[in-house]
Image 1 (spheres, rainbow, N blue to C red):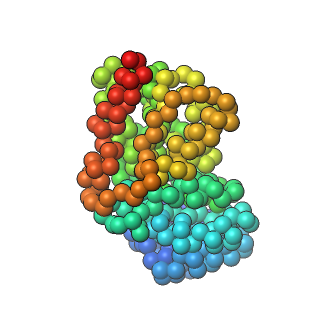
Image 2: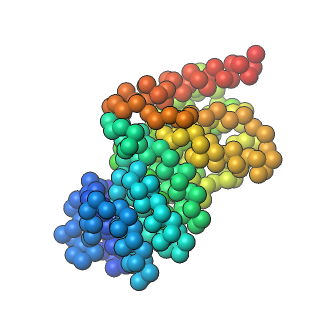
Image 3: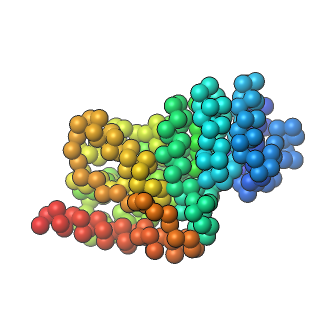
Length: 302
């Protein structure tokens, strides 16, 4: 089933669900006719949408809001923080074209600080599926959660058959003793390909599809630090505040010293282009990831 089909099934089975959008219907364009009175398009008014969603949630509804990730998380941030976050309302925030998925647009449309912004709100959960199949596996539990949740939407096809979803747990796709690759979202496909290249080169690789960055699977991170020689974090996000920061915070709190190699955007927006060109230009292809990892391991062994 697709995201739209799953959401339709959930909404028809439970009248508490209200589907909302700030004129971003790409993932839900066929729902209005099926949800009379429970499909609300506020127009390009992300702040108003969040305020209305908070009011509906106070009256027992579960609003599922949709907007471009960059405008949802930044333009409406105060409303999300104050109207939804402080009250702990079960509003769900579905961000379209996050990270590198905004490929051809300029910096104004690049949601590459969204994880950092959203996870900073107390009680806000953050779901970042690897692909369309992974998204559908998790969305029922995510939408049913009593917390507000930020949801990075992705429609790209899967490159593996995913394991069942468990809330707050990472999916261990591969097990290994030399390197742990930790990734979320779009870049899972590059991490999976890099893992195969590394294994061909003779390395034992553990691959974690993090799935949720809040609550994050701390146990999986700590096991990786204790059981493998190098942790690699891979994300289409700023270096600050995303997975690299999360891993660092956990290791410091546990007083564990472990080498961590991050792939993230350090103090820069990415150059707009078609997606494959963005990945190559910014150094996020499987081949580039593999080369940088092997170079780091060679330096450590010399």
